[in-house]
Amino acid sequence: MTESTNTTRRQVLRLAIASLAATSARSAQADPAAMNDAIRAFTGGRTPSTGPIRLDIPSLVENGNSVPVSVRVDSPMSEGDHVRRIAVFNEKNPQPQVAVFTLGPRCGRASVATRMRMADSQQIIAVAELSDGRFIQTRADVIVTLAACIEN
Amino acid sequence: MAALVKMPQRARAGEVIEISVMAAHPMETGFKPGPDGRLIPRNIIHTFTCNDAGVEVFRVDLSPAITADPYLAFTMVATRSGMLEFSWTDDRGEVIVEQRQLIVE
Amino acid sequence: MKPDTAAPDWLGRAYRAIQSSGLCAVTGMLALTTLTAQAVEPLRSGFDTMSEPIQAMQRDDDANPGMLSVLQGRTIWSREPAPARPSCAACHGELQTSMRGVAARYPRWDEGGQRPIDLSGRIKACQERHQQIAASGSESPQRLALTAAVAQASRGMPLSPDPDPRLAPPQARGQALFTRRIGQLDLSCAHCHDAAWGQRLGGSLIPQGHPNGYPLYRLQWQALGSLQRRLRNCLTGVRAQPWPADAPEYVEIELYLVSRAAGLVVETPAVRP
Image (spheres, each protein chain N blue to C red):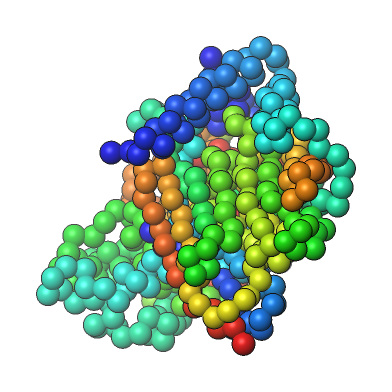
């Protein structure tokens, strides 16, 4: 049996997906409003500024099945001055949030990487939460070409 | 299920070490149809944590946008010798745990 | 109402778009050409045509997702498959030493079955004859893992086709299959992989189509898969009826592919887009 937290998470997720699907259906192109909503939820309404945050992602990928993403923030990562969280958002996947990394002074550096799936060419945004409560962000555009020979 | 952990075996106190991990998991998004045409239910790893002597030093909340066999890379300050514990939890509540000894000189 | 990025929809749209545009040009160009099998020169592994990030993924054993299956295969190798049944290690010893060079010489002639057999089929035969267990399917995670672990022990070694004369007739059949037009698109393997390698089909670079990395992790599959699976993709790609699982055609084509690729090194577990 699933724990109640997992069930609640799934229910929230289903609601989020349903509302995102509804949002997407309204316009012919993907609606970045859902991504902006997700960013606002992450920052608690605060507007991120620019800052020493760097998002590394290929600008052109042959297929979107595995796209390496890395984010670095120039931070001393000390008790008094460090990165608390780094979140990555995307514009056109069914969900706007790709991953949230929770860091702290024990990390030594604010440097994270993963691999993501991208169904379409889109914008990726990385937002970092700093220990003084500020948020900084950066963005990158990725073009995804499509594989020609489809399995099914 | 298995997971690969790449990290140094030894480090100097205060040194920042690089750690990368990769867990075997299909990360089913819930949007893919199976051979019978029906959607395969969503099942992804939703949380990864790295603990040092019971203290959480790094956490990731993953989404279906992360690839199958998810790869994660991060850094950590080596403080004292001990067992690092890496843990992946998926939607079904299944947990993968890997432990690695770090010797700090 | 559906998410606008549901995978099957955009793939279908993309495929139909490619069919109506670029692919017609290629087909038209090649329609009048009668193709026979020819040596493909210079020999280039699919690795060479990949983008740098995917090459890096294959090179790094800690980032190559195919290595997860290799690790699983090594565990299966040392484990008793059932109570009182020998493990692979019980007969063969240590995997890395005993299996070194083996995968580079497959497919081979199987005395027991009196037919050519690929590495995965040999593992199945061993499991049934010597371990007396029911082998799982050719695309099952366990079979793929064991095959990947055994093939990885030959990584870096050049493909060395078995010169056994009994393999000559099935290899000739494989060569004929490679040059035969099939499917609604009426294309043979040779049309793309001999005559048009290096050119683009839709957004993708056409590789020469070598078997030296299998089983491999295909990013499109988000999983490790066999050469059979990849050949089935090709058959579906030209809108032909794929042969059933474990049909002799697959091993016959593999015999020809290995001779065509002789000299390329084993890359298992390769990563491909």
